[in-house]
Length: 170
Image 1 (spheres, helix red, strand yellow):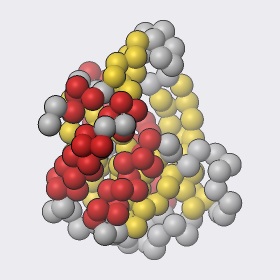
Image 2 (cartoon, rainbow, N blue to C red; image 1 turned 90 degrees about the vertical axis):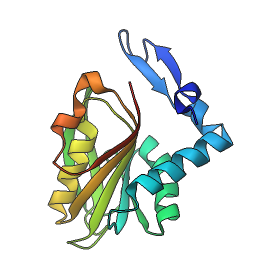
Image 3 (tube, rainbow, N blue to C red; image 1 turned 45 degrees about the vertical axis):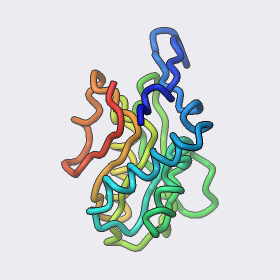
C-alpha cells in the first residue's frame, strides 16, 4: 500500500517554514489505518514488549491500537498538568519550540520492557524525552516505532541505541 499517498502536506503549519505531514487523511482511510497498525505490529513482533507508550496526542492514536493488536498494555505520556497522580517529567525541544512531558510514576513496574510509539520523528526531542521518562521509571526501552521519519532533521541520532521502526521516510 502507498501510505505516502494518504499523507497530506500542509505548508507553513504551525508556523512559516514548517512543512507539516498531516496524518488525518491517513486516519480517515480504513484500509490505510488497518495497514498502518498491522505493519507496525508485524515489524515490532520480534521485540519482547510489556507495554506500548504513546505520547500526547498523535502517539495515542497509533499506540493504543498497536498495544491492542500486540496483546499488551498502553501507557499514555501527557503534557503537563493532565495526569492526576505523581509523575515523572522531562523537558524537550520541538522542531518549533520547547515543551514538557509527564508519565505517572506508577504507570508500570520497574524492569518493564517498553516500545515507544508516535506518528512522526522530526528532531527526536519528544521521543528522547519519553525515553528519559522510562529511564526515571526504571523501565527497559526495547525500541521505537514511527509512521513517518523526517530524515533531514536527524532525530534518529538523538535516540538511544535500540531498534527504530519507521514506515515512511521523507
